[in-house]
Image 1: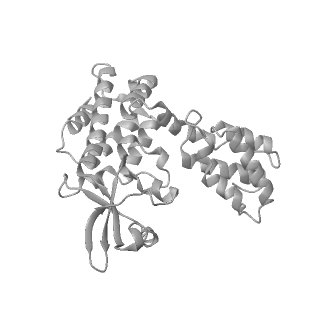
Image 2: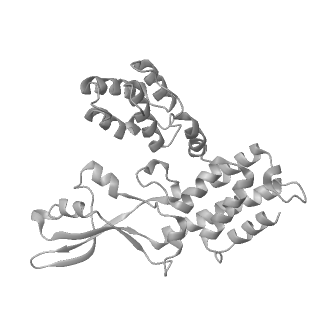
Image 3: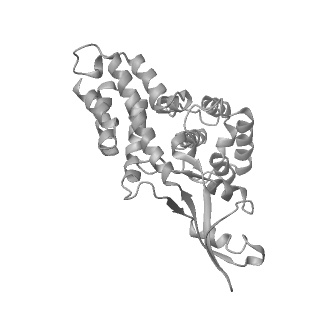
Length: 303
């Protein structure tokens, strides 16, 4: 099959741009009709949702070193490592790891592949911790960033190419002889190949994509909290989480218009803490959208 042979050849070396390889895979997916494979391709081509860090593949997440420039009355320091122990928990969690969310092609376009990259801090964080890093605020922080080793970015691209290559090689072995289309490969074989080689055996992440397409279609009965609780259980929300939501809804009272109460909004924002790893069935962002929809339905409003 020429299409598959072309993909294998493109994935075997670094001569062909990663974007061309992934777009070629989109053509292959149009024959395979596998939603998991398509979702992965779309994210690698278009980028990942930076507000949904739980759904990033492992090769796009790494613990980083934070550095900054400092200026004082008698001293100027550049590129100094910053300890995060003085930070609030939320800020520390945000800065201790980098989630590489941009399309794969954007990392390949860097002129010098081995050079380190940098992700600047939001300016409000610089101001917030300007005088808190050193004793008595001297010297003061004037600029800060998360350092991204060039090797991490190279590894990301290698991971994408290698996963495509392994997937394509196994797919070719499953092809009947002298066939011009991948449509003849059994769907179960394609599914197993996608999970093992594209998602590296992570069935949890792979299953999220398929499940999320149907989970939001559930409906909740107006005024029936049991119906709402049952829907939330379908996406793995714990009994403790459901009890906490009930208390927050009671505290907020009926929403004004279509705006949920403050405590319910906070529950939705933090709902991932009520979903254990063994219970996760959809991505975090999908779970939040579903929860908002069902809560609005409970109140008799459009979700």
